[in-house]
Image (cartoon, rainbow, N blue to C red; front, side, top):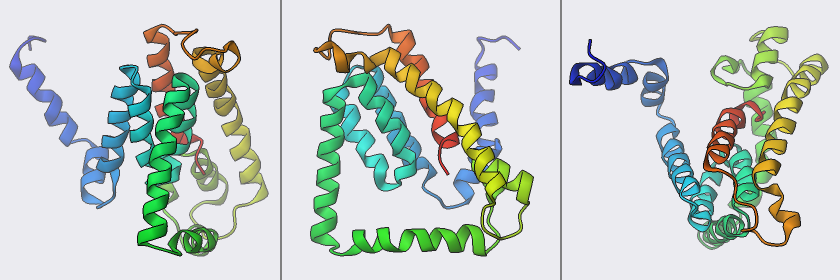
Length: 212
């Protein structure tokens, strides 16, 4: 087929909707598309040098903190004060809404979360194979799918695998934008757009790997 013909391009959405990630995302009733939409908006604003707006949108990802932790940290390194301000404004707004509309739920969440995770992941059989994390990999490899507390061997292998990715991503973020923190002016060091794009791609790829 001609690479420029509509018949060739029409295969792209066909392959997309026939892929296993699409089928799982649409059939499991999860929040995949919400997270993807917020992440996409964050990346578009990030690449457009709109630090405040990128921070505002990235803050919404904290409805599930594991989605936002790595992205927010690298965004702050890359975009500086504006991104931090945006994250802070969204965080304060969401916190205020929670405290006024749902008083007591935040403390209850923090209190119950460790126990709920233990029951889900250790007491009952957990779907580790659905998690693209190093913890899930080592848990399945060394413990299988049987319930039980995570062993010391799994923890050591998990942290040993996470460490190089975490250090590498931190160094990349520092090279791209971290020098702003010691340079006085947040506009003094503007990285080439390709370097920033590589950093964004690395952040998206590493974020799930670094989560437990």
